[in-house]
Structure formats: structure tokens, C-alpha cells
Length: 308
Length: 86
Image 1 (cartoon, each protein chain N blue to C red):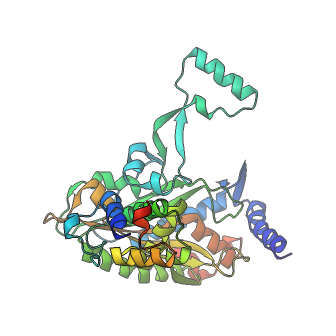
Image 2: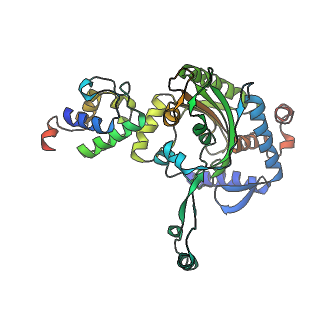
Image 3: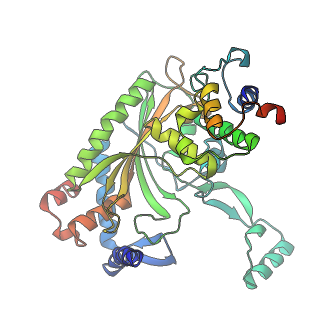
């Protein structure tokens, strides 16, 4: 009984988003078009993240929503999250191979084995493409980078807060361990202010990434034990009273990326990195769920922050 | 059992120190074992001793030293002398 009610409520948020034209159906769970008003809100939130978070010395880097396959193998994503990666394959065969493939396609068989791996995968996290560009010695005070991208994670769901294709906007600090730690500590406070400015009620909770398999259980425990990930959680679905949805995450990677890409401080020590990731659609969904489906009727102070 | 644990650490721990320097209470993380290496150690322990660590034991502290690993294995019913049967 309870399950039925939960499903209905969850569907109703998705249905309401469809009904208002905020999300457009594509026939695939978790992959949606954005209507005009939704697009405007997404742009406004994206711009607000920049206005709120960009400091004087922030460097901007932007990449397309695909990245090097070699890089997700080198940075450990493929071994830790093989269930989430979207890998791009393409047909590279001759006429004979084409015939065999079309035969399978026309008889509704699996035809993936006719394709070959390409050099690219769908970017799973906006900050991943920046690390290979940072190899070498950093300037004295490290670097601060803003990056944003569409990201992909293969987890089909009818929960509108768990899209397969979504925007992630990040600030990344690279430098000496103590500098990076202090920066992240500051951002755990700062990110709460960001959400409060938008009239959202939140709580902060230690979290872990969804590492795959048996080994993943230990990685999750390690990540939580060491306090490497904090999430800012907001209620989006009326049915998830217990958990809520993470809309911003504050991550401390230690030397995970710097050791793989030989990113060193100015005096030759292994640098550390941290990133603050904003889930843009999730923030927009939180705004719609909290303030109503029509952005023109949102509280004036919230509108003023987003459309100054 | 200790020797088997040492062999697994030598193969999977990616420690930055020589195995001869590794004492039973040496902090493995301080000796260079990364989180990902600790996963390989855990999986090798599960294979070698034919067991599965329950969720409550999947904690950083359990894999901190040879002694903490030995205590966990004893708690899971592994015999001290398991080495001779293997």
C-alpha cells in the first residue's frame, strides 16, 4: 500500500513537470527535453552559480559532454563505476559486416557487438576533463577552476531528480593539501548560504559515491569514515521524507587525481584537489517543488537573486 | 594466518615500505596503502579465507594493520592455523 502511494507521488512530480511543459518526453526514462520556462530557470541558476561562486582568480574551462576514454580508465572511473559509464561505440566495419549487423537489427537481436569502441565516453563528471590539463607544477597558490558540462550516468529512473543526462557546474581547487582542505571547509558553509538565498531548506550530511560491487562497499565506508564527501540535501520529492536529494556536493579527493596526472605544488609536493559540484537540474527541481511550478509566482527575493 | 596476511599485503597493498619493515601494528594507510589498494586486499582476503566480510566490518579501521585484519578474521571464525591447511 505504502509502495503504491510512494510511486504515485513520485510519478505525480514527474507528471506535473510534463504537464507544465518544464520537461519534454523523449521515450527514455531519465532523458528529457527542457521547455522554454525550464530552460530560462536553468540558465538563471547556472548564471547564479557563477555570480555566487566565481572569485577573482577563477579560471574558466569548458569542455564538450564527451571525454577521452583513456582518461576514465586512468582516473579510476571505469574500475569504480562501470555500471554508470556511457561508452560511445560506432560502426567501423565493411559492407559484409554492415550486412550482418543489419540482419541482427532487422530481426530485433542485440547488435552492440557489431560496433567498435570509439576513443570517447560520455563525460560522467564535469571536472574530469580538467585534470589531464594540469600536469606539472602549479603556481605558488595553486589554481581555482570553474567548469560546467552536461554529464551522463546510466541509471534509468522515473525519479525526475535522477536524470541520466543532466548539467553539473563545478568549482575545483588544486593546490597544497592544507589550502585545498580549508577551501572545501569554507565552501561547505558557503554552499548552504547559496541554497538559503534561494529560499531552500537543506541539511548537510556525510555521503559516499555509488562505488560498484563488493570492493565498492569498502570504498564507500572509507569515503564516509574519512569525511571526504558532504552533500547538501533538499526535499524535492514529497515521498522521500527520509533522505531528500543531494543538490550540491563538496568533495575532497586528496591525491586521487594528482597522483595519476602528476600534478605538483610549486615546490614539488604532490598536490591535492577538491571540487564543489552543483546539480543544476536538481536545484531547479527543488525551486519548482518549493516555490511552485510557475517561476513568475516565486517569492520576490528569490526572483531577485536569480534575475537581478 | 599472519604470514598469509603479509603475503596478501605484499601482493595487493602497494605499500611504500619494505615488507621486512612492516610490523604487525604498522598503520597500513600511513605505509602508503590507498583506498583502492585496500579493496584489493579485502577481496584477496575473502578469496584466500573463503569468507565474506559483513557490512559492519567494511570499515577503514578493520584494514588498518596486520593485527586489525587478524582480529577481524578471527572474529569471522578463521583459525589461527589456517595457514597450514591452505
